Length: 320
Image (cartoon, rainbow, N blue to C red; front, side):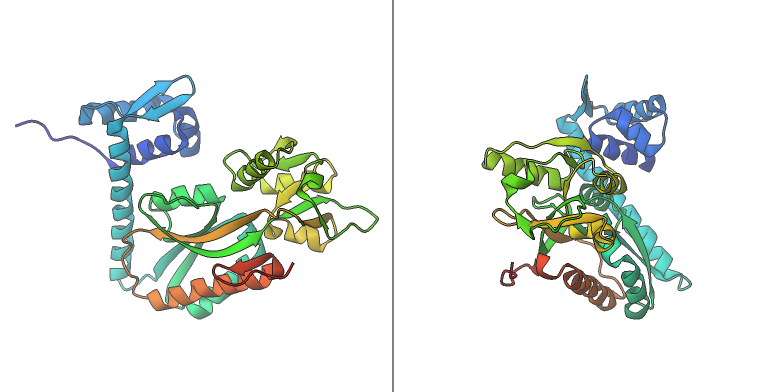
């Protein structure tokens, strides 16, 4: 009889991360694994499956057809393993059920402490763990089975194995260094784009929105700094080095302290949609009613924090 394939979960986790970032070197850095060791694990996986999974080139890697098939199956399997762990922890009766919730930095800054207090009152039998990451990172973490739910922006396209529900639409703000003289409450998009900008990388939803709007209206986009760090972006604005398009929550403390000036875009507001994400076919929790109530409380707090900058999906447009 032929020998059965010896495939382990670590190999599948490594393969999924390489597939998501498209580069073995970056995957090794994120996984904190030596690149030769990571490459060896993938070669062993290919040998066990008798199939090439990756096409290697100068820019990184691409999935073969076999690789695409394995990615779908591996994600599903890793999600199942995490669910098994959670279910068996719950069976012991000595451990609270764990709710792992992903949030963007802007949401965490606005209502993070309130959420922890709400969780104690709304879900006394559930232990809450918050994971803070940019939206595209949250979506990937959820696909890997590392999160139960995530509130993420910019996930407008369907993702395999992920259910999504549109929650609210939020208007982005133009933030700039504070000045002594009062500024108009709003300006046009063309006026805003005359400023040097600092934005997150190309994978960030805000930069994609900006590029799309600039192309549509044939406007120049002057991104002179790119930074994946939200604090670094805010610091550059505070120091007067650049302006930026940001969600209110990302710079809420600096705005309230008067360290940053803020204006709305009058003619072509840039907006983003917040989605609630969860794995498809996720089992119903023993405390699902309490969890649903807690998630709804998060949405209510966000709407209160954002005021006229946000509206529930399906609601009438806010006054500008």
